[in-house]
Image (cartoon, rainbow, N blue to C red; front, side):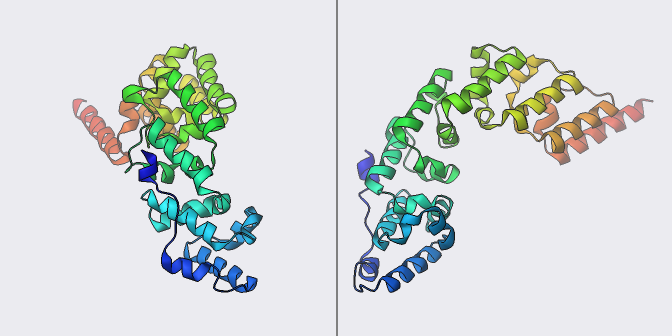
Length: 281
């Protein structure tokens, strides 16, 4: 159980001696706190601006947060990055605010002990998300799409759990349904195959790529069903340049073959085709 994997927060004897009240001088204590944050590579000015409560919080409370996060397997630099990104965590209560998230990842999603730090590193926002109002409702919705069994949420895509169901996930699904004429079942299969689809902006990613695919590439939407990873490639840096080259040489190929290979492989492949075409003349 999670209780054994992540014991109640504590801090080392050495730190306890340094920070547990050997001096009552508030100025010295505050300076020690700043030094401690700097040692963690947490920007103290940013932290105090974002989280004013940090000014009066005892250093022991900050150490206990670090201790709990370290107990998950996160390295100290990784802990520092998380705390610098979300300074509100510095004054959070580990027992009531952080442990429930860790238990949720372990008990309800079945993420292994060794993968917990991967989930946190990839999506630190998990630690400031409510289990009851955010994480669990998102998981429930994802399960209705097919994120179960072999396709269950893993440490690679727990970022989906911090997305609001009504404001973020559903609008993207509805866009794919309405613009491409897909059924909910078809969209569900697409996002399970390519979960990153649910992280892309409609205005900045999905819509421009659909427009280019339909108008410039004269594409068949059935191909997007077969290769939803199309949306993960850069429109300006990969899709447009490669399509232009293929069009110039009158070459047609499936999206997967066009995009999955590296630039070097693509250029070599294109050169070979041009040489073979030249030899046949």
